[in-house]
Length: 460
Image (tube, rainbow, N blue to C red; front, side):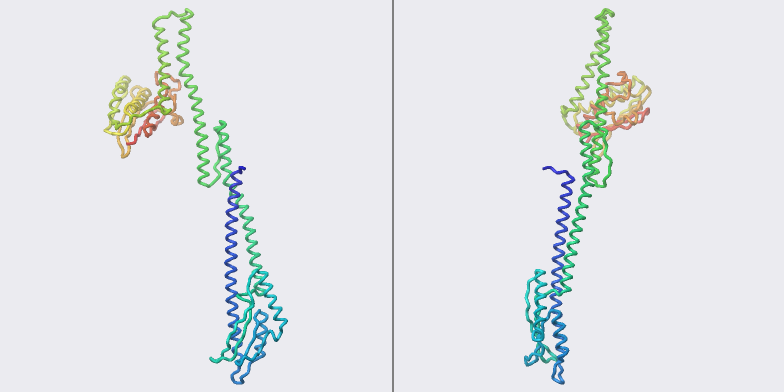
């Protein structure tokens, strides 16, 4: 039978608290009772010593007599306290005997003590202890003290121990109630964000990517869970938008050449146009354009779906830049764009051909989006752990809200999607995939209307 997280947490917390409270109560009861028993045993010894001391002073050495009235008073007080005395002189003659004085009272007191101890479930029995009475270093007699050992409860002691046990039971019950309330509240506090996260995950699985969870907890792990769910929903929402945009972009990229070829062929079939070499050449160019788009898509698929195999060897990044840059430098000069390249040797494990493709895509992007009389600066340098390539241009730049999407498929800063000003918008997506496959990073800094800077960092 499956239980909810809240039920399991409540039961677990309740069990732990009850176990702790039970162990503490048992331990406290044990320690207190042991200490109290030790205290009573010590009191019995102290009481016996006091009785012996009091009786020892009742011998009058001058008259050779005992103060029997005082002895009687001590004997009766001791009897009521549970001590049965029998006092003898130095000739072992009985001076005073509690049992001879009042046997009925002695029996009653002994019965009461035994009953209290049996009710308290304490074992023991009455035992007699003989003490010498000494005065000025000379024995004057002896006293036999009988009491319940090893200790016994007086009436006040019995009331105290009962009150203590009742108090401990009340504390246990109060702690039990508090543990239930605490367990339920704590379980509710923990499970509420978890339940909300689970509900949000269900809604996300059904395609509701706009769901967000409000952070109402101070627990770090729960905050991480909520942040992860919110990040997941936001990422999926962005991906859904990109998927929709991708569908629209692919349709747009394919529709234009297909429409052009279709209208040309239809006009020629219906006899409106003569199938001249120029018109057939126009249709061929559109077909080649379609082939280029499909080729770009196939290349991106190979890169992104783990069909990209890297031939990693020690490669000089500066050498790769020098091999690719001249072709784009010539293209830049045709548009009156100042083109500069600087760098130094930087050897890293890389696939030379794929790395050249990254450099080519970045330079192609810079040349296409930099207007006449603009500037393109390519610099390469090394750090302690990596090789860094920077491509800076003074082109049209990227709006701030579009920077996060610059490496997505078919992204174009030119919303008219004029292929004269750029390709299909796949080059940067391919570049990112290749750099990521190398374990590196590619980032962009841009300001709309003032150019962009792309930075590639490859681990050494």
